[in-house]
Length: 219
Image 1 (tube, rainbow, N blue to C red):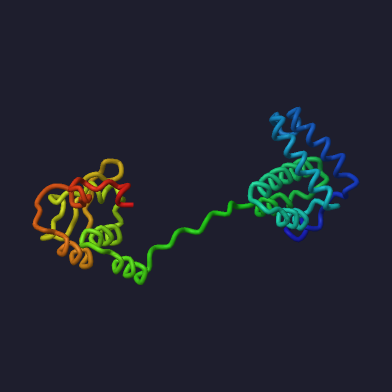
Image 2 (cartoon, rainbow, N blue to C red; image 1 turned 90 degrees about the vertical axis):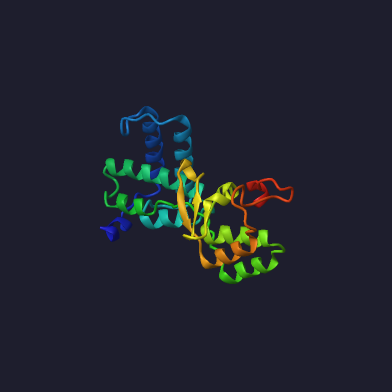
């Protein structure tokens, strides 16, 4: 069906006229019973005309080539939407093989999402640890790296929430106001041992003035 659909097309001599009738049917609601907005009709018409200026046939191949020539996702998205709608109209009129619709659907552009940020490698973490100048800095870095706590959660941590005997931290101000326990790794325990001076209460992370560290200062 796919190979057949690629061979089916309408000559460019017929397409301009069909495009005009199609755009009028969108305005009047005679295509599928829905009246399209003037803005949508305008950009559908503009994209169809731009396509017809380049290609003599409306096929999967020509649509794919046309989409590949556009340099941004919004342009490809609008062009595909317009041509897919035009193709449905031509199928409805019996001048285009219905098999083309499934193939055109597979050509729908996908947004270019940025790559996910990778986690810090062991060597990078070691370099950051080596750059720390105080036990507090080393502990703060180890805390975030080993537990994945949010900055606000780390700053809200109190000494009474640190259970070194059982090896966990109690996060009281988690997302959605929920509490959870987070395990203390050996690396975090080592940093904690260097930083903890026997306090039993109060904020774990303190600023230079002795007040609780804010998440803005931590970041």
